[in-house]
Amino acid sequence: MRTLIATCLALFISGTGIAQNGCSKYYPFKEGTSFQITTYDKKGKSTAVIDYTVKESNGNSATLGYEMSDSKGETVMASEYELFCENDGISIDFKSLMAPGMLEQYKDMEVDISGTNLELPNNLSPGQTLPDAEVLMNISMTPMTMKLTTRIFNRNVGPNETITTPAGTFDCTVITSEHESKMGVKMSGSDKQWLAGGVGMVKQESYNKKGNLVGSSVLTKFED
Image (cartoon, rainbow, N blue to C red; front, side, top):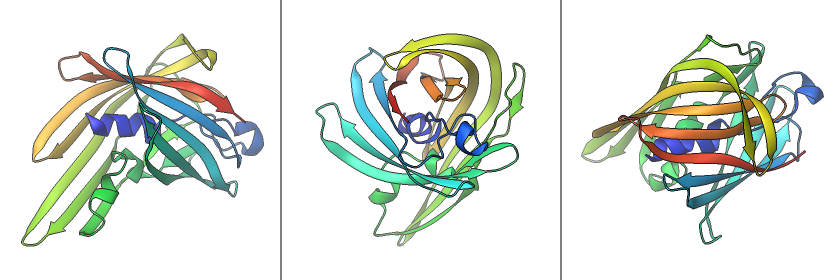
């Protein structure tokens, strides 16, 4: 389910920067910070590598650019999205909920996009419930209009856990959520994400509606 991969690759990506600007505990605002996320299928085989860089920052917002390479190391797409300081945390551009390359597919069509940003406060504690997020797309293809909706909901903070990845060992806060995408056919599932203070997303696992693992994403490099 590609919408899920978008959430993990373009959304919940790691970060530092709280020491630089006091805005976010989990996302980078320092220009030049770079990190890498590697995605895997349900059998543990690498499917893509995504390299991120903080391109611009003014202390209240940052532009995060990313480049995706396939399993052969060939670049398949590149894009960027915005992070905003808000309410003792950050608000993440709702466009990051879309699958990578989605807009490029419809570049020659009339596309109307709206949505609700995803919020991530700095102070997370077990039992806490976080706001939902969504993106809505209306794609005009004369004489018809297609509609795409993606929702992230039931976001809950769980007990802390320790996770080891190629980038190191981290004490993490766990966030679980559900996702749903509809474009003619509705697809749904759930996610489990590990966030480390001063680092951000360390790992994410994605499950289908039956609870079976369908893929994962892991922090494999980080350079401040």
